[in-house]
Length: 347
Image 1: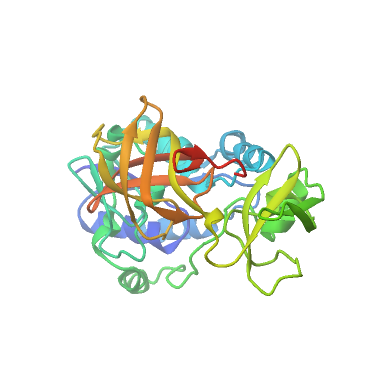
Image 2: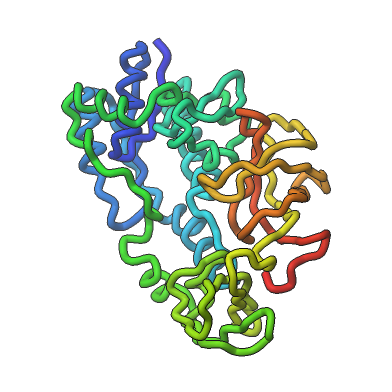
């Protein structure tokens, strides 16, 4: 009997992953990470008791704070919009799962993510609306070779039906869509953690001051709601910010060119199978439509992603994930955004 350690968060997805593995004949061990002070492990404990599986709860709050939370705060202080979930999967969650797999003499690790693994390659989930390859693009081939994703062939409704069949307490539990370590309003959290100072809002076309912002960290590229700036009948969009000058740049109109870039420099690149393909598709934010791109390989850590048709609101700090058809081949962090081979000075 093969032994698999499953990351049990207390949500319905990871719980059903454990059920399916048990039905397939695996010896299942549940592992719950405590990453934040307010985390409640009760649902995870009840699920493991219900399924009669071994359960370990491990406190990783210090590691999570040092790697994920501090990086998140530092990025926002530098005017960057990070994706902490991608960082957590890459640097924390799967590293710790893999470590515990070895310590507990297990054969595999498993989670409730929606994606497919075959022969060490990562593919999109059958339920494309729930596909989570975007968040797994930073995993290594070594990790993927030991990872089982039991939910890859089913949809969310089927998952809830399975949980209901087993009378799990979390069968109808709402999906978490927030950053796990922020238990308050996002802007309230940012205000409490980031050094926000009021500054000028600049119309990038006229170079005139048109208002005041309440802290650069509260705004992201492409944002149009909550700007609280009058004086124009057209929609206004955030197109950039200057941390040194504490200035926020705005452009008006849905079709303004300031939101459009044609390439981006991507760093901390992870190529799962080290396939250096040139013509691919890319996603620059989760759920964003795929864009045809060509790749220039600069070195082992950096690539230039070209998309000559132009894409709106590509943002430093976000993750660029690369696809070859249905296969996710890896990705990295957007470091610099360019247009016609020139860095956009206002980003």
